[in-house]
Length: 161
Image 1: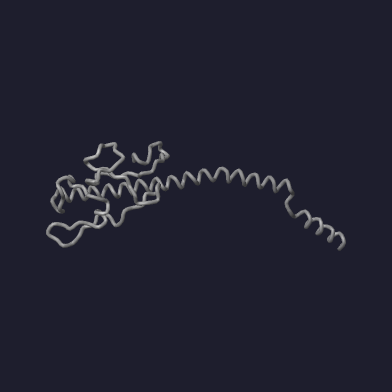
Image 2 (image 1 turned 90 degrees about the horizontal axis):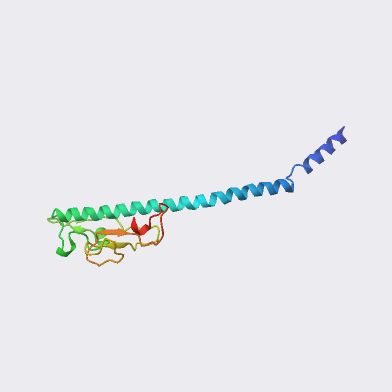
């Protein structure tokens, strides 16, 4: 009886592994799942960058609007040809002195990085520029946009956001 038990143990241990057909089937299934997962992951990463772009644009535009509001209320000194808009984005970070105070009011902590371009070189428009201009006249900052030539998942170019 002990001899019979030994034979069973030998056949069981020899048959405990995968066959070549099982390995090929498992690898094929894994390759198919990977093929499906990679494009989905790429879209997720792109969607996250687009969300970051929206937030960065909203943050900078809100800072520009607050600067304009302060200028319209006479709380900060402005130059005539700027229409009350900041001269540069750096002005929003460095801050401006409030009238009647020695303190500087900062509208932004830092200039955000354009997630599509990987730098802080944003496109800017001034009140003196044409509405669809892609070059900045340098007088003031009325609006900002991404310099990326890419198109969003929604079909709209990033520069038009």
